[in-house]
Length: 168
Image 1 (cartoon, rainbow, N blue to C red):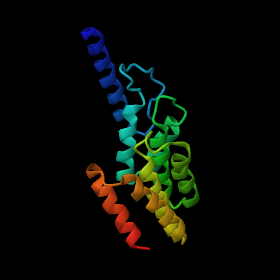
Image 2: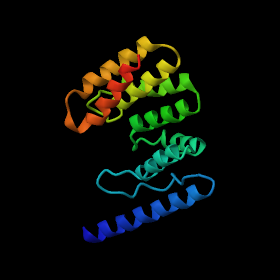
Image 3: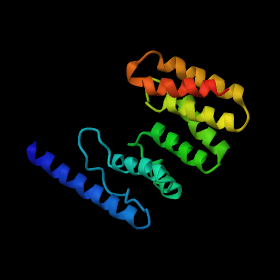
Image 4: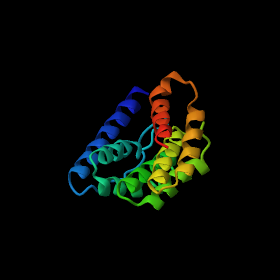
């Protein structure tokens, strides 16, 4: 078991190195590498952090390229990819596409199945507000606030939603 774990760790490190090298170049992530991770961690999981990093750096083309390569992979979190795609689309003024991405998370997932349900509600509400549809934004933000409840771990999210509701 220790030898297998060591080999798996080495493969994981090699995979991460190849992703990092690819992203320094043209952003082409080598997602055709075999899934070598044990314990339910998929090979594409490593690239997901690069999506968030690219979004935070406003490298939207790079983020979208990685997302589009990830979408067909059944081993990745589709709800996260849809949410991240919505973030990129919203940031690049593709409002209707962003709404579609965010709302696909809301329509196709149960809030208990994914951590991206509430954030998708919040972001879709922001897009609706931008489009002048405050009533729809309020509906989504109200649902988000109800789902968050009084959970202490989600206090920041609750405060953000409360602020957004106060802007209406």
